[in-house]
Image (cartoon, rainbow, N blue to C red; front, side, top):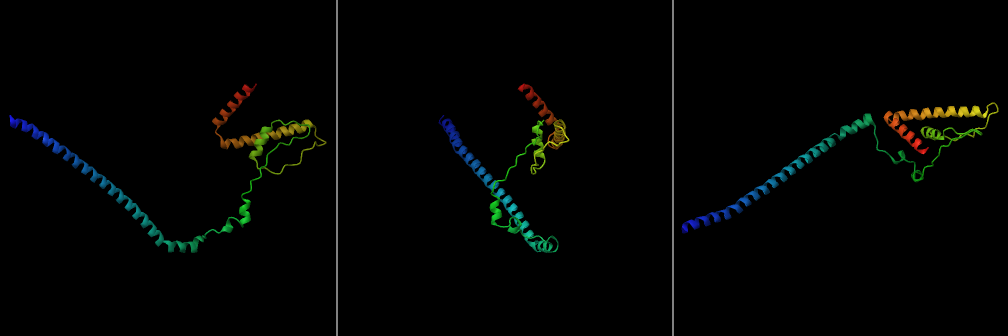
Length: 189
């Protein structure tokens, strides 16, 4: 009987010794695996560095050839400051705010502007130029004729704006905008 009780104690003692030993072996294996992975990463980084250094070495070895090509064929030179600005005054003038010109519709005397929004949109499409002198009624034309001419001019401007829109927006987007504008127009009534 005493032997039986010592047999159980032996198994317990064996388990107490073997379990930490297994843990330590497993832990040591994980540490060695981490060191191996770190070494693989260092090798890959060293290979990248070697490739970079080889590329730079080859480029520097070819510098003489590149200089010959530049002298014979390309004739490239480093930019000088004069290529960008003439002097310090020109540099200081860049800091000045740009002058903004607003487009405006010039309406002949006695005529009513049909669609001023289209005229402003046309002015945004076409480059802004100096404003012409105000239109004075011509002795041979009535106000109605001038109004008709203005209306024709506005139609042409609408066509130019529409042509500019063709390249910028898709037809589905333009259709959606038209529908939205019609809804807003109805909502304002």
